[in-house]
Length: 249
Image (cartoon, rainbow, N blue to C red; front, side, top):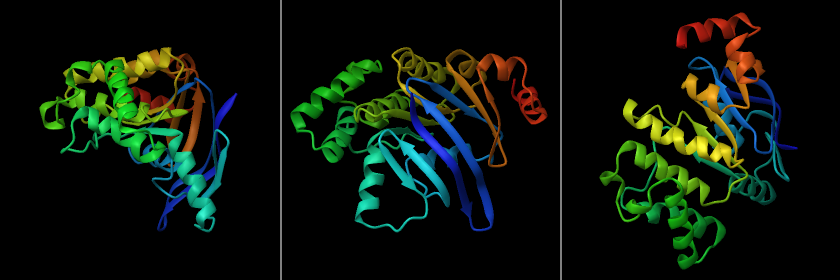
């Protein structure tokens, strides 16, 4: 069952056409890895999915909510975009934690501000999510007291606390020292096993092979090729895909 449907999605920055008409369907519990060279539009696609960037054209459906790009930003449209955002958890390259709040306060923020959850309930929820990502003993630590890997796991817990339909990850390990990468990937793998729908932009090829139900290769704002990890890594059809993989593997 399709949980995300993207149709003819385009994004221009001035004269620069970063997305040139993306069609993509994501099923419930599917883990999709998006890869491609820098500047291919991967991060822009993710940012358009939850309207951190306003698409120039096209349609995005997540769950029961549909937004057509370029519409008038009236009250109804703002409400639909807000509902769409509630259904997407976004994990950034940089952790984007509030430095003046503890780990548990960072995770509590979303449920209180977005869902209107009581402080008591939000604290219970935040604690359970921090335990889930292996940080039950770091609830009262501030970001500066945590390693990069721990901060990124707090960021994942923060997104999970909103109970999203889909998790979006934009290069979640690119800002981490090599020895901290695995602790974050371990958490993402565990969520995949639980059936969480996820779209992951990453250059971690071995991780992609392990976790992806589908791999999407993008270049120049287009989906060049997609298939299972076995198909893409084992016998890619397109020359651009083969060339990219030969450079990164």
